[in-house]
Length: 156
Image 1 (tube, one colour):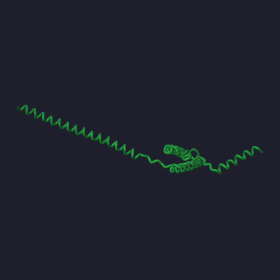
Image 2: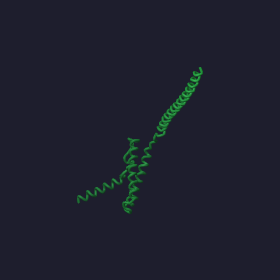
Image 3: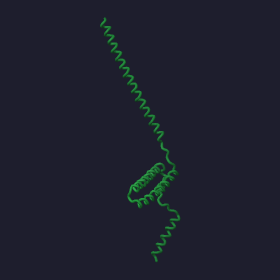
Image 4: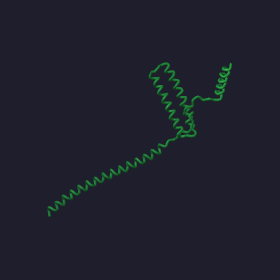
């Protein structure tokens, strides 16, 4: 009888230790599951927040026109500076830096033009970011007069 009680006591101790280990493992598993679920829900919330937060505010067509005029003037000024510095300094570091700035500004204008046509496919115009030479009525009249003088010169 004594040996049975001792065996039971030992088996109880083992059973209690095993039960403690199982409880600890269960708690770890619960913690792991909790953290896994929390992590997944945090990811889902952050994804939806990013979607909400990252909705871009598109520029108005008027703002595109303002930016196009500004970038055009800026690139023209940098081109003038580049010409002046390259004549004075030659192919030195300042000249190369200005060349990089000039080319980056051209790339920026091109990318902004892409954005313009994505946002306003019908209203967009190539001349917004790359206006080129503006031709007005007076310029056309002067050009036609010049052509007429060339034509008159050939007949004489």
